[in-house]
Image (tube, rainbow, N blue to C red; front, side, top):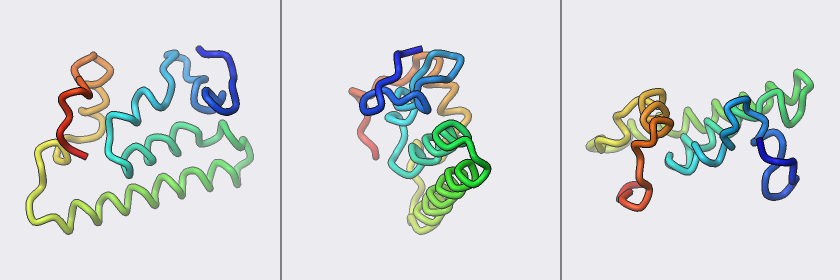
Length: 105
């Protein structure tokens, strides 16, 4: 776990028991899915009140709905978009994703 740094490594993104920082996961996804993960990750951590937690979960839901609309409006679904989020996360966690060869969103 990284020391708390409100700008570079805020505690609500670095306090996961695995020691993984949220951005280490989200940077492998497109903008909307990255935000789904980010807001879900920090729900109940940045603002521990029920209202704050619900607000973060609603933000995650908004980005998820936007991603569903984006995919639904595409004439063809590219292969990366069709991989489920859990499968993609599992693949990343196992070290099987090299961002330098990423030609998609």
